[in-house]
Image (cartoon, rainbow, N blue to C red; front, side):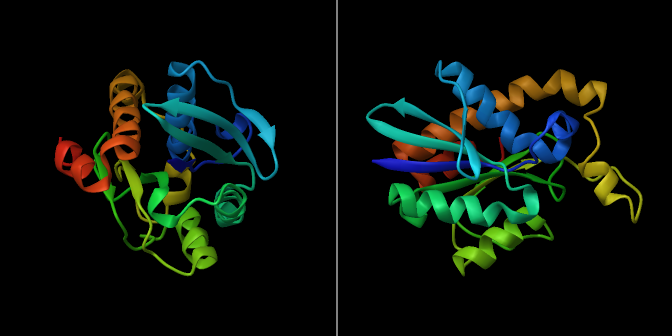
Length: 187
């Protein structure tokens, strides 16, 4: 069984430690734990993780957040991966910091990466892992917030939350979406 796991973020050192790049950060940790390294490839940095008979194609689009759909579409077709075996890992300001929720579908919630993926796929029915980054910003400051660095307190809690997100990704690939949601959502 093949899966496409997409971490959303923006390429480049400038964005590396920002809240918006939690998808990249999560996939980096998963790859490191699996002793694989991302390589530059067409439209994305990619690597393959093998886990319990499953093949997980991890991609970090290099198209910048607002054009993430282009890389998702390319790798879904290139690897012949069905939409139910696609998982998008993304930041979410609607969830408190560190809250993790897996969903089978949903709106883009104003997230430009998800908006582009939905436009390219022609559907909002694709699994996603939402990583809460909170909404501690004033009106009109959302862009600065999501493109801002983590606070010291958040940085201290991040490794544990990212570790759980990695567990959820592996669970998605082995026991499926429904059982993973039942086991992890709201924890």
